[in-house]
Amino acid sequence: MFSRTRLLVLAGLAVFAIALVGVAACGDDDDNDGNGGAPSAQIDELTTRLERVEVETALNTLRDAELHAIDEEMQQASEIPAGTAGTIEIAFAITSTTTWPDELTARAAELTHALEEFMAALDADDLATAKGLSTDSHAAWHELDHTGYSWILGDEHTEDGDHGAGESPAAEEMGG
Image: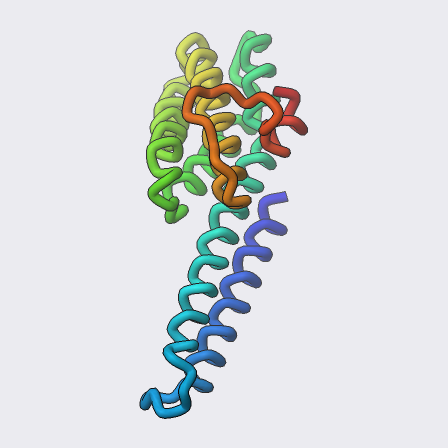
């Protein structure tokens, strides 16, 4: 599940690198060709696309972590479910290493912090604390997911948490 995502990220980065080299190789250092800085505009466009790919890949990977299902399972558990710690570590790695755009930085930081605390509770085998932090992580994920997909699409997003008709595809798929 996660290896496919990693391959997509590497493929995206490879395409970006090839395109960047191609743009640089085709550009003139003197502006006598009348293009008015087109290579710079192309690089800006490619950079924007790469930023969107990175955010979308992070959001899709977090969707694959199934924080909604983990939270439901944690609430019913009498002991920490097997595999939970590994999944939360991967989700933390994704949120903490992704370069989030300014519009998403605060939401990503909230999720990263919640996941870090959740990992600590799991490491301490503290089920009661882990249950609360599972809910916190789940809620923070929904907020990042909603605003993240809106940012990718260029939509205006609400800051009041009212998802309404603009519910993200991931949140709809995860049931809430």
